[in-house]
Length: 278
Ligand SMILES: [Zn+2]
Image 1 (cartoon, rainbow, N blue to C red):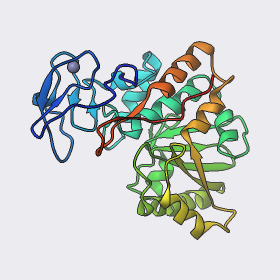
Image 2 (image 1 turned 180 degrees about the horizontal axis):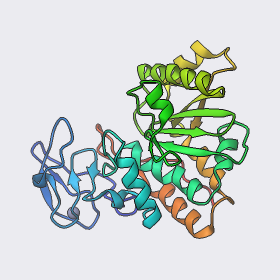
Image 3 (image 1 turned 180 degrees about the vertical axis):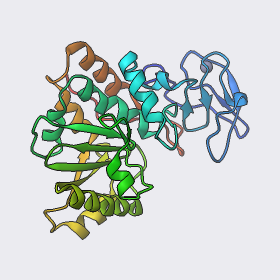
Image 4 (image 1 turned 30 degrees about the vertical axis):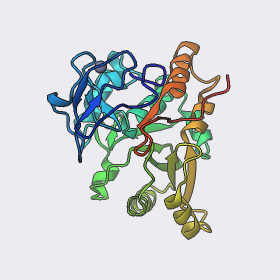
């Protein structure tokens, strides 16, 4: 996994070529344009990453993930059997961040802490549905199938009283159509399962969230369902004192080091998160 300490603060590129973003590397590859492609001609022979002017993708999913022991791998494999697109390799995509943050609470058996963080009442029966995959049911979550929804929320967080749909974003803003789609889906699930529904928009601290603002204004006065905005940094704070120290150290390093790639105007490296103070 490449972070601030491994990467060139400024990306060097021409109209036809880009340099590998790794600090110590002087390899150049052709400049790709438009939709990001995992094509060998854009790959650094030294580091195995696929390069574009703004971002990169790793040679394997695992290089972008913090938790990859055997149990993690088995769950990932099951998730991928349901998940529509596999984008774990892509550095800028929120998929790897979603796994890295939420999975650390799950493997530490501290999901009740996530309940507190998202503002719902914990009851010890918390479970996660990653990209539609229910580990309890060992299949696409039946409530999604029943709702005949083709939507694939990044994460659904459940307990006996609540269903929280999380729409996670790293750099890009949340799209209003997407929030509306999840709003309707969540209401349907809530009715069906007789639980309260919360739609949670998860973004980086300090990023402007116009879509969330608009959505909030529109649905401000409804207490059920509820629309909540939260940050990755807030979730990180909730992990403090919650997970084991070695795993917490890994998360700290990730939060300190993670970037959003290079800014399109200045080609300088953009840190993803507010740096933790400790
Ligand atoms: Zn390289």
